[in-house]
Image (cartoon, rainbow, N blue to C red; front, top):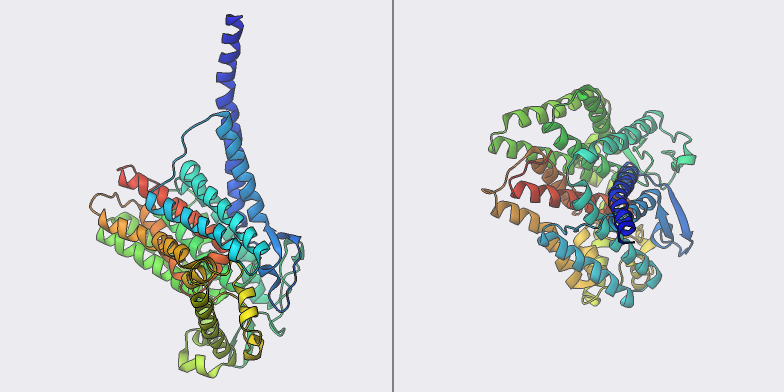
Length: 467
């Protein structure tokens, strides 16, 4: 009997690791699908909860395709851990602890929420994002697993977005949840120049600003990998990069432009400071190649670019720009007032538009839509209270303070420099838009970048090279 038990134990010992590896491989495939689908607006409406005139995505219970594959990734990871138990790393405590604090106060805010159903839904999503962060720290850890799905994501979105702008209409891809687009329609995002309304690139996303941010983060991630690796796919990667840069240009997203530019400048300065000449040359080469492709499109779209950059005081002259800036100001005032009245635990995660409707029933008279303020930290404070906002502030600034403090002990690999550039980019977007806090595409990018930065920083801090 003892001999039989020994044989069974040996067979289990042989098969469990193999089973674990197979399941882990499936989880990596699901992770890749998650990354590809991050900006896509494909979703299933789990429960309709209309509350006019609030945008339905703020009140309905929605599951995006990217979130479905996120759940599948985590489920498969859990199965692989059961098949072959192993320690789970939490990453640097100055990231993992405040992220846990944000999730905790998100759950607490459900009890004080003006819409408990929505807040419960968002608090569950925060828990999933926390598990996503742990998965990245433990199972991804480098940029190698990111480059192919990000390149696919950029290629698809750029082809669709550029074609939309060139044709000035949607492409009939409603089966992929493309929005119906016509620059003459009210509610469709456009740019105005020389008396002409021009459609902005949407791709397969909900808004050009979301697409612009996704392009910025993706291009910085691709550049981070490219600067540290020799590849025979250099021509293909450069082509996708240039196409993505064109897509970014045609979103006319100022926050996206700023985020990408700041990330590139940061990486170039660090490479120069640390005397990484090869990485600097590769970065400048891929960016310069993209700029060459962009040159004729910049010339062709000069009137629209001038308006977006406030040429000739366009912000005061063009009605659509004036209205946009005025609306942003009103939203900041409204969110600040709501926070001051509910400073301790907030009005519930994800429930700020509903709180605005209750507090300001005549908001529509000022041509303003009920939505979060375009400043993430203010939205966090209003929704989950001052303590949750403090945790969010800590996870925002701690990576920079820690990296500066340990700068003499770190190995500034191209991966660390590049992912830090992406972290800078998504942090800057949070000063000008709210989707990195409220909406699924922004949240997935935010937690993905936090997870990658944590893993690469840890490896760099211990002297290991991350590629």
